[in-house]
Image (cartoon, rainbow, N blue to C red; front, side, top):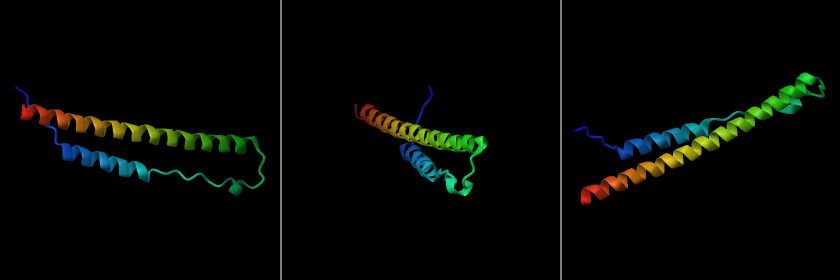
Length: 88
């Protein structure tokens, strides 16, 4: 028979580490003022691309944060179920 053990504290600590790492992920957009009054098509494309990258990063961070929260809830539920089984 295979025994699977949930080390709740270890898993939660790993999730907290991931949360801290996620909070450290930043991408500072370069100031548009650094481009001056440049009206080249490339400049406009570059600005659009930078804005798109910022939006993708924000969406990614929101998705990862939601995944972390869901995983924490699932781990807590597994712990509660294990404790309930042991009591009965």
